[in-house]
Amino acid sequence: MSSPRALITGITGMVGSHLADYLLAETDWEIFGLCRWRSPLDNVEHLLERANRKDRLHFLAADLTDSFSLARAVAIARPDYVFHLAAQSYPTDSFTAPVQTLATNIIGTENLLEALRLTPGIDPVIHVCSSSEVFGRVGRELLPIHEGTPFHPASPYAISKVGTDLLGRFHAEAYGQKCVITRMFTHTGPRRGDIFAESTFAKQIAMIEAGRIPPVIKTGNLDSLRTWADVRDAVRAYFLLVTVAPVPGAVYNIGGTFSCTIGEMLDHLLGLATVRGIEVRTDPERLRPLDADLQLPDTRRFKAHTGWEPVIPFATTMADLLEYWRQRVRSGRTFLTR
Image (cartoon, rainbow, N blue to C red; front, side, top):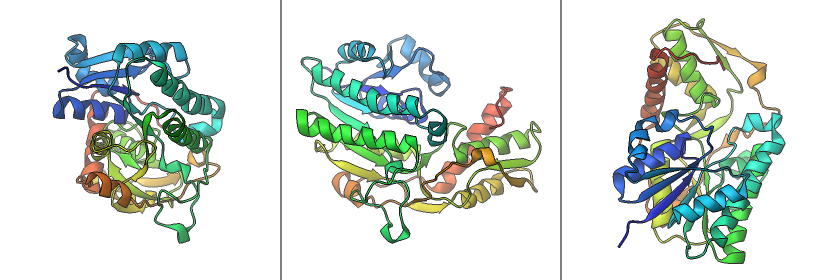
């Protein structure tokens, strides 16, 4: 009997690369990673030799907005499991590129689900990755956020993820596809893009420590409240999602257990810095026109179904993120000071 086959869209992203690491280490699955020809390969650089040998890892060129490329990739991969992680995933950028965000995340998801539906001889379990951002601006009286909390998206990105979310459920109900939807709350760790708050803070600290920039941290909204999870816990959750009696059309919140504001997270990172007296300065360009500022999840449904619990502490996640940026800065690369 042949090994199961998994298709990961967005394998070169933070989550996709960690998921590939997990599946290669913990399963015997064949992994097919979908990426655009121009996608940076930094996050999967440690896997490229394995891909060159076709040792359980294969990269497929495709684009979510090109249905023909997706049909070809699906026909090659013939997956038993699909992790749909690819997206325009930066909320702030969605304000300046709303059409591209909506096209990639909504039309792209529909293109992928149709390619999977119309390819003969396959019936994969499909993880459709929505986002906690669909809940948007939630009043304190509605906390913690459960799966039935009304949507109030606060960015074009969040609106696009509402579309992604609904498409997953629609394809399960209308066509019988085994789509399972997650709304993951804030998750981070090594390889986190420097456009996200905790990662840009860690990068700036690493650059300050190396004498590359003045001792000033530029920030956006520091009052936003988040519940934090480690990306390595997140990918373990995604594996359990598709392997523990998946229920087509089911929707789950997934998230960590430690909550604090963006400002408190920054204070923690500054406490790890080797330079003292770093100034914190608000940068108006880092402020969103509208912000989802209360993101506290109720994850009981997912935990009850799979038995998953996060195990990596917030302090470890932040220390590993900062060390990731220290190593990148020590490599001599040049970075935008964003």
